[in-house]
Image 1: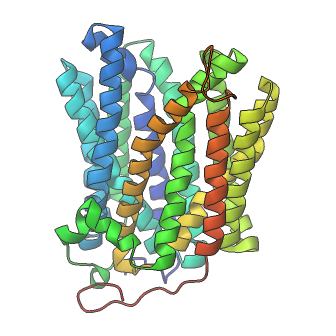
Image 2 (image 1 turned 90 degrees about the vertical axis):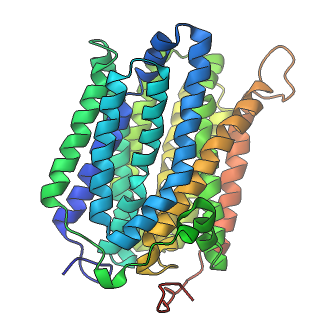
Image 3 (image 1 turned 120 degrees about the vertical axis):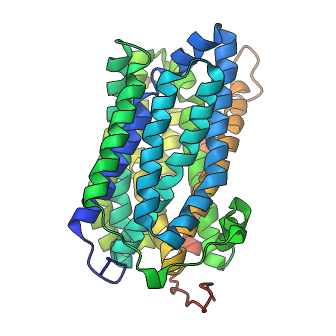
Amino acid sequence: MPPNSSSPARPAAIIFILVTALLDVMSMGIVVPVLPQLIGELAGSTSAAGLWNGLFVALWAVMQFLCSPIIGSLSDRFGRRPVILISVAGLALDFILMALAPNLWWLAVGRILGGITSSSFTSTFAYMADITPPEKRARGYGLIGAAFSAGFVAGPLLGGVLGEVSLRAPFWAAAGLSALAFLYGLVVLPESLAPAKRMTFSWHRANPFGALKLLRSHPELSSLAMVNFLLYFAHHLFSAVFVLYAGDRYGWGAWQVGTLLALVGVMDMGVQGLLVGPVVKRLGDRRTMVTGLSFGAIGIAAMGLAPNGWMFVAAMFPNALWGLAMPAIQSLMTVRVSESEQGQLQGANNSVASIAGVISPIFFGAIYSMSVGPNPALPHIGSAFLIAAIVLASAALLGWVAGRSGNVPSLDKDGATH
């Protein structure tokens, strides 16, 4: 019988999910150091490269927004295994396409396909919900988060080394890692969603706006979705302004920034892989979520106020406990929908994250631009960090209210919750 949320998790299935997550994120991280350079080579100028790079980031985020609910709903209909395997295989083919891309248009097609195939992470989270009981889901999501962090650390490091050989080499390596994940899953991965618990596919639910309706189906679920949005919104501060802030305020170059990002990844691995389980066991999901968000707010505020680099580094340690929040939020949300809606839930969550990924960098970029220069509109260079801290503190307050105990909804004959 396939594992489900009421039966013990199968070690082989959990190991596969973690290995697949690691390999998938590594495959995406490998190309990070060289993709802008390849864009510049194909574009022919630095100014054009900046425009194209921004377009590629937006394309990826838009495809995540559109396709995550579709892929999540497909996994609710046909099971997690085929959706995950097809997506991983598609990612391997996508990297081959980008490795061979003769011009920017083909590279753009590759980024679009990459946004579609990487949406399989929705099925990965749904799979974990299938095979773990509710009281252990936060730990399971923490392990996935740790695998993601490991991939984000190892991928760019390997990509940087391979990029010295050729700008195309990292893409071939990424294709190989994705192909390895596919072959490994083909042999090891069992199905997690029993046929009796599957839901009929409906475009009404699968489109991103229809999927978001699921988040409004329960008052606490919609509040938790807002907490999720605020978390992602604050997190994109780092992708938007961290490199600029570090250079302008502390004089850090690429080496220092790269080292710190690797340190962040290592700390995140430790928090999500080792601390989430024991902390949730002691505090419960709700208090763990609020604790993580509160430490995140304190850490980011300290970063924005740090007068020197050493104090900024010290602030990274309480901020690392922010990693407690995401697995707890995911766990709280999964018990508020039925087993046949876990894929749709994760698709909706990923769409929410994609919206934050589009809006947040623009917002924090604008805030940062107003806080630097000879006559800044904002008086403090760390204003973006302080605003992000306020966002996280607001998320903690909302999360405390939203995290009240909820029951798993029942299903009618059509698979709808009530």
